[in-house]
Amino acid sequence: MSETRLGDIERGDVSSPGLESLCRAARAVGLKAWLRVYPTGEAVVDAGQLPVLARLESVLGRPLRMAREVALPIQSDLRAWDARLTDGRSNASMDAEARLDDIQAVARRIALKQRDDPSAGVVLLILNRTVHNRRVLATHREALRAQFPLDGAAILRDLRAGRIPGTGGILLI
Image (cartoon, rainbow, N blue to C red; front, side, top):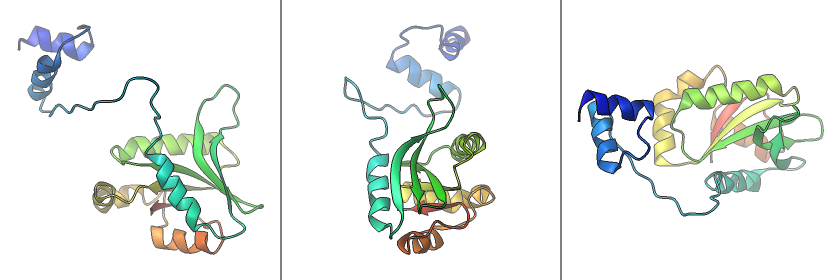
């Protein structure tokens, strides 16, 4: 592939580069091309999060209640927490991830929501308990420690007892 063609693909100047060209362009910059196939029509974007949140909801002790898709309190802002727990006095806002790939992007996205939502309360990152997510967390847990100090066992203990944890954390469920 010529440098000109590669540059055109990188800038998005090629409307339909084709699979072979994309694979070559990826290889040229040291990447491995990856293809996913999705059904046509309207896809459920958060389909992977739904079972994670259902598992979480099943362990909640009284008086905790969960609301899903809690919008940020800014008019015309489309962001929302995936879920929010309340015990009637305090809140825990949650983002759920089926597959954790970009920890910095997740941390930034959550930090911005925290900044913009005064009623967020404690923030929990809820992760699908997969081999991949456990591996990512084992490697990069300390990079998230300041933002999410609690680990899963302490969070789970509080939630089962019907308490909002005292600080944010990460729970694999």
